[in-house]
Length: 463
Ligand SMILES: Cc1ncc(COP(=O)(O)O)c(C=O)c1O
Image (cartoon, rainbow, N blue to C red; front, top):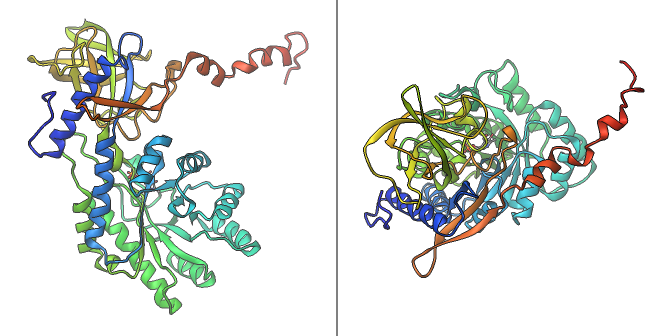
């Protein structure tokens, strides 16, 4: 890809051109170099475009005036400036832990635009959400029982619902398939007696006004996602009919739009999914139900790049191996499950310019001390040399924002980038690189002698 701005009008090519310019500028501006050999980059323009595409895709199919909250799944990119950027672009937050809730609040996402969904909420977490007025979905009968107790003790502005598992089946990645028969999430709707239990739960609790289903993430075909939504819709209709009123007024249809990691193309698009939904569940958009969505990966993945310096280029058994600074600590899923999570790798030279030259089959390795720490195996691409840069593409969600502290490798800095007024690239900090002092502190540094002092060799009792 040329470093120049792509004029073709193809959004994927434009994104690639922006990325190329950002990598070059990161080297020129000293964000990347021998002393800072790894960095995460986020394309602010691209993130804004995806947020706008999501909103307009649903606007195109919903009846005018329908309340729609797009709540970004914070787990996909738990970075405060990113949440703030999305909030400004009209996107709320779906949170699934006290930490994620704190991040959303730190980003200024209001309670009314936040949804809490975790499967293991403690009584304190439930209390906090209710006190703040955050929407939440009970995962199971025991959690609903807790809510009963809390709701009876005081009014809350929180819209409340139940999460169901429509049990429509899984996709190509078992670990991300939330609607299998035995998934741990929600009330398993097709289990014996479960549907009737859910309906009764609503009839007995007039304050239950929402219904939630998230059918899965990467690897779930659109048709299956839509089937999960259709099941939730049919259940809401049944509840409302038996209640004789529109008790369920909002459907939370989850996230999960898959991302294309194989090329620059954004596919499927939000518009395509909205079309499939409107064909499969026409009543969903007729204005009788407010809607909540919880997309994560599809909003961020293609706008992130982790760029790492090639520290050494060597050869083993006849195969070239580029040893870089990006491995399991920033691409955990790819390293441990390479078949499910292949990543494209782009090669840049020491100045940050795209490398050209014949394709050479090579491995791209990370810095961690185990043999499987590989970003790519047997990949045909221009030969990486010492001092070059390898960029792992489409890593804006669930990758460099999700540090895995193997070998106590430091969290890399993350910067957002956009074009400056003078045509150059401007970077803004999103997250500092982790200092080694922080690694020591987070590894119990303050308790350095606690085990040896508390359990002196001579007087430690035997258990
Ligand atoms: C309840 C819920 N909503 C939304 C998401 C986001 O999924 P994705 O990032 O695939 O859009 C997840 C992912 O695990 C989830 O569990």
